[in-house]
Length: 465
Ligand SMILES: Cc1cc2nc3c(=O)[nH]c(=O)nc-3n(C[C@H](O)[C@H](O)[C@H](O)COP(=O)(O)OP(=O)(O)OC[C@H]3O[C@@H](n4cnc5c(N)ncnc54)[C@H](O)[C@@H]3O)c2cc1C
Image 1 (cartoon, rainbow, N blue to C red):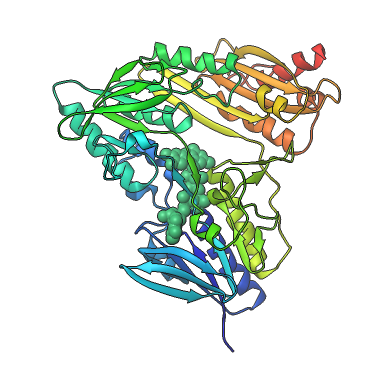
Image 2: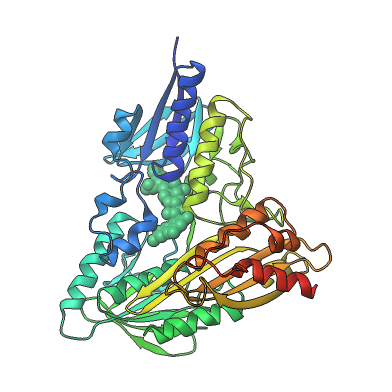
């Protein structure tokens, strides 16, 4: 009997979750399968999320970020080929084409999982005429990027002068890389096209901006980068924005976002959406015998039902596991969509700033044609007489007509941001603002105020509706 062959493209969070879950499920139901994974780099299953903390020096070695090495995947039954770049899919023949050591090869599949993730957006102004990145300019996407940043930041910190990093992009990776550069002792300017952490409402993102500025990060909003100046070595010396401002720098972090890495899939006639992501069904299928998971996909927003692009490890792992299950027992699991839940921090010196969000912002609700009311409540993360107590601001959102909870945003000190999970869990279950205001949440002085801040915020908004 020939074994059914599953080919997985991309061997990180989504791909390897799918591969191992398929192997586990096949064992459970007594089915013989073969799993082949093609990975273009030499790295597998690592925490990209940990890269900023490795770059900052908080995590000592990249080894600590690697959950499973290629050898470990092979020991666990995946036939993993590294240095294998998937280049195309012949759907009629059931064949994936790839390039390995410069040689074109192909592999037949019974089922194919696309898990190629996302690629950093590299604007034209960041490139030399030969298509290579300008010296001192790099994204922070892979372990190779991380090592490059460590080398650059350590060298810059050792230099006599100047020692300035510009971070282009004010999303969570921009904020985390700003923290890393400050931890390495460099001066940081954060340039952002709109506001820093623009997925928050302006009254919340302005709190982030203010605290970053107080912590010594120069934040410049409304600063769209249009060009670079380079020296005779081809090394960046300054960044120019659309309004003509010039920011001198020695290094430039590209934190300008990512887009789905789906070029080869488009060539195979698979449908992609507004961001170029595959639009999988809830079970993860994109076509007969073809599945997709992770950052290469667009996903449904659970509240609006609209497609969105939400490239996060938390989704990639879940989607990979769902695909792995459905590969063996079709239709048994489905992905429930995303709420836009996200969390980050900026910690340096005396500054401990935490930021999180879930659900709809005012702008997102308006774009979806939904009405939301909102209110900001300020408080503390613990009873005021405890040393743990840190300031926190919580903004909650609800539909004023149905009283359905719609989202929350949190900006505060230590232990503030993870409170967002209370709201996310309530949102996931379709709770009302009153449910959140009345739920039985934990209280003791070191952990919360007697009216837990999230609950207090919900109660105040509920009273106002
Ligand atoms: C600096 C940073 C910080 C982050 N922090 C967080 C966080 O705090 N929380 C969070 O939830 N998420 C975070 N993320 C996002 C998270 O890392 C990604 O969402 C997650 O890695 C996506 O997993 P994936 O398997 O879909 O894609 P990827 O991790 O991108 O993996 C795709 C794999 O496919 C390979 N590949 C691509 N094209 C091909 C091809 N043609 N042929 C063969 N192989 C190919 C790639 O080399 C890669 O190994 C962060 C990301 C970065 C970069």
